[in-house]
Image (cartoon, rainbow, N blue to C red; front, side, top):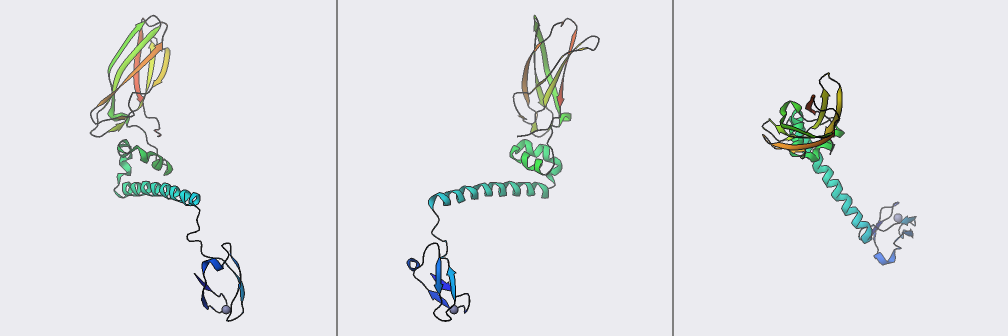
Length: 200
Ligand SMILES: [Zn+2]
């Protein structure tokens, strides 16, 4: 181990065991300067401490990778396509959130298909699928189900989430809902995708 006198800058070779691990007062034999010397910390980290350093390092690496992916997305001008990008890489959603770019399902490309309603007693069973009409994978949207009487009075209104969060390009995901409806003789059921904010 090498110690340098802060006053005359003479370098001394000192055996590690000759210096207290927490440091100690030493005197320069050349200029008589007295200072408090602390041995370098290398090799003196406890196993517990070094483990913590490692996991912190990994976490930092993940954040770094995420940032790089985001920067790549930004550089590629993919920001405009972030809704599509996050359908493939949902891990990026929090990153976009941090940048103030909210992810919402693109409801223009989503279509409710195969809507079926059957009621027994006061129970209305509703099923169908949400189809992705775009050429890319897409976020599924929550669906607003409204049951209205012929005079327009809303009898029941409920949100339902389809089975899958991501719908493959050209694919669909089913949904099912059971509603309690009293006067269903003349009721109209509508199911509308809602462009709600998507979080992970
Ligand atoms: Zn000195």
